[in-house]
Image (tube, rainbow, N blue to C red):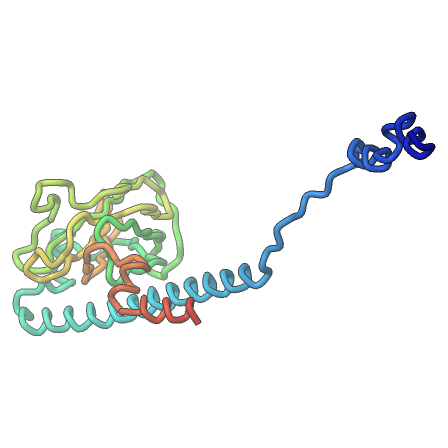
Length: 248
């Protein structure tokens, strides 16, 4: 055996020491690569959502305007075709008051009827008791005031039930007060198109009609529930436009 072989045999691991040290070395910490997100995607999503919100608001406004115009035309047509059958407001006043029209007090309201109103959709009517000079007054004792639905055609009659025999006027349709009137939530549970005149008259009737004159809201038109934004997009055929916008 030569000298070089003797050195190798006496130190068999010398040639592998650097390799072994590298293998057993433990790093202080491990860096885990993080995925890189595309910063453009949130901007595109925000832009799309903003477009959808704006479009939905526009469609709701457009549908509302079209519904008002359509309702006004339908009312005008109904009045023209059944003019002789429609109840005159002064006649309804006389009917409610039994011919007595010299009450010292009357009602004024700050809210108008929704036009049109929608089936099962609540609305609010707020008002006050005033004297003949329109000055707000307070009664000496609390009095009941009731919201009552009347047909718009002769003969004059109260409408209390739907065609399914459910109560037609729901919510807080009766209030007790000495001054301010607040029907916070009133809804009609049947569309007015089921009735000959296609509309109702809504009367606010005081308990003592010789002290306070009733108030009449004429021409209450009630339609089925209004369309939701998704249904409006389908109605106006704009989903295709939205898809094109999202893919552009």
